[in-house]
Each structure stands twice: as structure tokens, then as C-alpha cells.
Image 1 (spheres, rainbow, N blue to C red):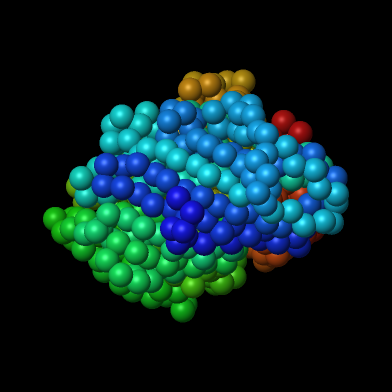
Image 2 (cartoon, rainbow, N blue to C red):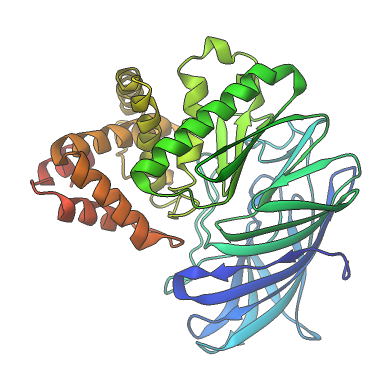
Length: 441
């Protein structure tokens, strides 16, 4: 594998200690994945090992696996803690640099055989490869390793800088986090800075509709027979970008791609500078006058809450999901449709609590077995909680608190307790009763 050209550069922004991945990656027409990476950076403590996550292996161990690790020419011992987690023996003192070479392989299953949302699967017209490489676990006094549950989002990662040269089957177009450049048929270079994770999509026979808002290049990709829905998705995205930029500050990336792909159990999935939307919803978009635009308003909001301001999506999923859901309401408010969305959230929260009465808005992902009540409580309930805070604090203090939270945790992994502290500090009136009523605090 050594010699294929894929360069992946990762910067651990949380501690100012850069990480760099120089990596090769290729995808064959039958879905086989081969990769190699040299990962270098600076230790944040006295490390005795490096811990990497193989997220696609949560669905099936054959989807992504480590096959070797080296330090210069010395092969390093490593062990699989579980299919998604490997520990590589590596001694390095705090503040010292390290460099480890990795080899990995896997396979991308046909859509429908993946048992997931479709974020690591292939169909005749669209392949989705998210986290198709070993991701270094975040360090916060110890390696942050959360269980990869089959519901919700399992990725917990620091931001990274990427420069990727990607080999794909000819006849396919690559769309990815970052900025794409086609070097030759089947060969792409993709670059991006401060990306929470790297993902790419391969498309065949798709149409594209471009647009821009506040200096951000936006492109909507869709099957040609879904043109009206694809243009509507673009229009919602452009309007949402304008609203969120005015209230929260500039969009964190120079471009944003929207791609209709087959998804299962999810209407949309967010990545830095890349939104996946369920293709099935494009076929009935005119019958979904509320939910269809909600998909894009929500996923655009994740560019601020998740991509820029990170969250531990397993321990505290509400930190990004409640904020993204409420931020999507700002789009509908600008359209004069907030009452519709408040009614939708009320119904969703009530349904979620009836399904899972023991869970709270701030509960970890594990408190929602099988996803029971998750969307209603964390998404809708969390949005209603934030709306109650805004009503109590007033717009000026509320949005000042959100902008302050964004500034404090830009490119970091945020904590929910700190969000509540900032809201209370910016409020001129007490919030404790709302915290108790909604969060049980």
C-alpha cells in the first residue's frame, strides 16, 4: 500500500498540539478499502499507548480493521480492545513528538446490508464513507473512549486539518468535507482545516445546483429526477445560513455541500462542510412542508454546534443536538413559522417522555436503549428548554450567551455544565428554577 497518495493532516486544537496524518487510501469498484497512515504529533501527557477508534467496525469488524503499526522500522505491539478500539504500545513523554505508521483495510457493504444509518455503505449511484480511517481518540486526562451504540451518534473527536489525495473508481465524483480538486480521472485532492472528522461521498449520474450565502459556496447534489427537491434543499440551506450568521456569527467553513443519499433511520447526518440528507424525503418533499426544510435547517445548524463547537455525543448528546434543534427554529422563526415548530416540539417531547419516562434532556446516550424517546427528549425537549431560557432572559442576553459559548469552545469539545454557567452569567434574572424544571438540577 505504501506509495498511494492520500495525505491527512490532523491538528489537536484543544491543546495546541498538532497532529499530522500522512495517509494513502484507495477504494476499489467492489468496495474494498486499503489505507496507510503515518501519524505524528506531540504527546499531551506521559503516554504509554496511543488509542485509535475504528468506528465503522461497530457495524461489522470487517468494515475497518487495523493490520499493522510501526515506529520507524520497528513493528509495534498493539491489541484490539474491541472491534472499534485499538491500543498501540508507544512510550512518549509529555511535550515530546511521536510518529507512528499504521496500515488498515476494510470493505464498504452494499446499502441495506450495513445495519447502520447508511453512513458507511454503497448503492448503485452513491457511496458514503464516513470515518473510513483510524481516528485518534481525544485526550482529556485519559483517552476518551465511549461505547459505539447502534443509535444516536458515537463519534467523539478533536478537530483536524486535512489534505487528502483520494483514489476512487473512474466514473465517480467525490464530494467531501473540505475542498475537492480532481487531479485526474479517479484521483482527487481534498483539503480542509479544523474539521471535526473526515467523510466523503462518491456519486454517479447526479445533478448539482450551486449557490452562495454570506461568502459561503453551497452546492446541492441530487438525482436528476429530484430537481425540484434539490433546489428547495439549496434554498433552505442558503436562507438558514443567512439567519444563523446574523445571530451566531460567520459560518465556520468556506463551503458547504448538501447530498441526497440513501439513509435508513435518519433524515440527515452532519459532517464539517458536508450534509447528507435522506433521498427518500426528496421524493415526497412537497407533502412534507414542515419536515423537509427541518432536515436542512437542523443539519446546517450543526456546522456551528458539533463541527465548530464540539461535543461528547455519547456522554452529553444534548449539548449539540438541543442547540442545533433550537437553532433550526430560528430559520422557521424568520419565515413566520415558529408556532408550527413549537407545536411539533411539544408533541415530540411528550411522546419521548411517554416512551422513556426515566430519561432527561441531559441524559447520556445509554439512557435511551434502542433509541427509545431519544429524539423527543433530547432534540425537542432540549429545544423547548432553550426556548424557555430565551423567553426568560430576553433575546439580547440569550444570543450573547450563545455567541460567548461559541467563542469559548470554538474547535474544542464543549461541556454542558459550562453552557449552563454561561447562560446564567449572561442572564440578569435567575434561571435556577428553569434548570430544575427542565433538567432536574
